[in-house]
Image (cartoon, rainbow, N blue to C red; front, top):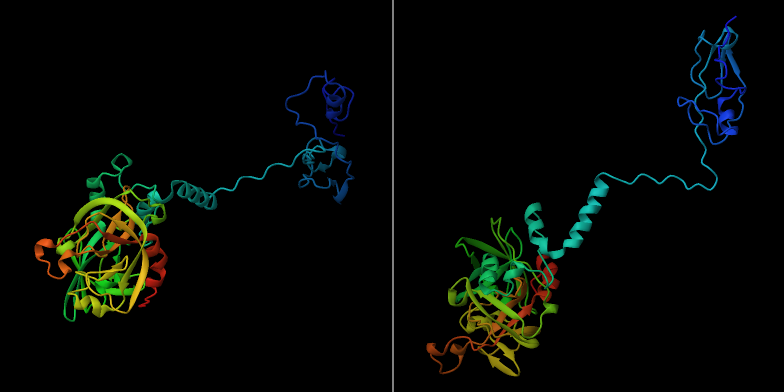
Length: 386
């Protein structure tokens, strides 16, 4: 008969080695022993499954004829019983979610923290045609160059174009602002109203043909799209609600066909009620939509009669020099953000009895606030021609 051998005194007088450790804290502990369970496991009854084989419930597969087995038979190995949590113990914390979901959340947080300053960079990296927008605190130009006209002109000029429209009785010359890299351009409705064809020239001198996407005569806005354009530099649309009287502004446009002309000044007033004609024939009678578009301000008519079909909008007034051809161009804040679309200016050459030497800006120009433009973009993109 096979017997189990035990070294003298190894387990003292206890059958279960854990008992001694629990009752005598001073007794030596064999480091090879597994830690005792939190609660003594319940005694399980053996279950006979085959002759000379004994299996314990929950045990591993029986090993017949194992050395050291009782009664000469094989025994199954009894697995270590997992420790039950102590009463009142807090459950283990769940593993933190990682992988794509956590990465996307981190990216979203970073993007929200950075804000509009990276809108244009993100657009270029992803190839998205989403309009880049920012608050008035964002600087398109470096912070150290904020308010520097040369830096603003260098940063924004590539986003301003010259717009030439062929009309039934002549031509109309104005300007436009690129808002997407594939050639969406915002301009004035009166620049392209009644156009039979449209030609757009970038600051780099490249020419495109364009089609009208949508118009809104009540706000004097139009959206046109270049054909076959890509990789253009969109302007960053700011927040006109933050504009204050006295703020430095820069205007870029194509007065008298002189593309890329830069002038500067200040915001001289806000929320001016400017009335313009919604009848395209009015501008054509005055010599072209973008040249001497008639408007009304303070009860007086400028650049001709506006006619009976008119609309009024709230405008930003500026003393930055605006001349015929600046219509549809950009009014820019000190950080390089577009805060308005230039739309109306007094031209002395249109006055009765004036000569060409009298032509020029007198410091009275108006721009459609960029927040009005942003609110109207969805309507223009839908193809509305109101």
